[in-house]
Length: 314
Image (cartoon, rainbow, N blue to C red; front, side, top):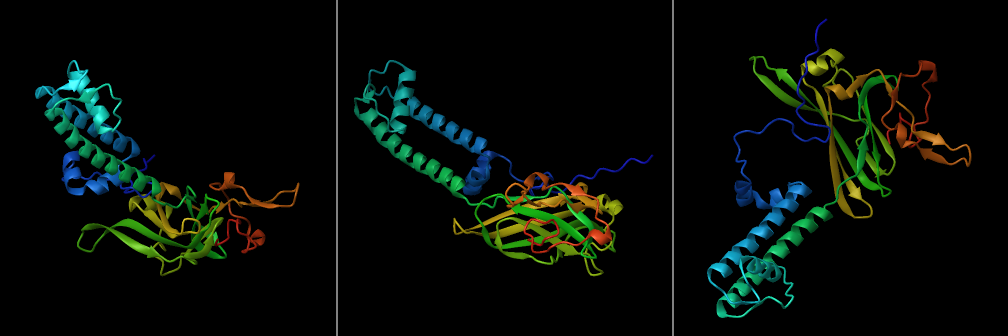
């Protein structure tokens, strides 16, 4: 029995590059020196917290060494550790009063260190606020994309849902297919094609949205089969953008479906239900990622206006 060849995806589900980047400066010092703002905005919270904690400790160590080596007169200081605690209190503008400068050198160091503390505090506050205040769309994407029959036509489908109670105004979705191709010259190249959606915008995105692309003769994925998915390392790239009606700010996100995330001849389970106890309509997001075999042709009658029905365009 032949073993299925495993191809490394280019991006993960969140659209982050999985390929290694070699030959670029990798030292954190080089990144801080040439692209500090981008590094501080994109590093993980753990790394950025450890970085600032390390800077804080090193700056205090530097000033403590200056005070200790210069034999600065600091009241009640009896060794290097006391000079270090004095530096911490000065840089953080704490000043308990037990340790205090008592000569010209100590006061000069306090002056410089206080200024450095103000600058460091401003930078840490600015970076943390910028990271915390960056708006983003909290959109759920179905774990799989489906290629199957929809409304009598061969269709690529996936669905999205707004996980927040607020609405996204003028939501816009674009889909691209990326795959490896061999040119006439024998050169291997990765190409990206636009996939036209039946509806690429939604005036108010507050519930669910089934994105559909009709696979006709002009579609870039007209010849896509289960066997050709892995062979050409296909992935679908989804970009989403809109305006949060509460924040009045542009929010965006992205998602990617790799070859293993694309299934054939299935349909999404319906999200739209009516509570028999009170007659209220609701969406069951526990079934958001579920799929099932397609209905018989005679049973494929749906109300396209239902906001949560799986065949709905949103």
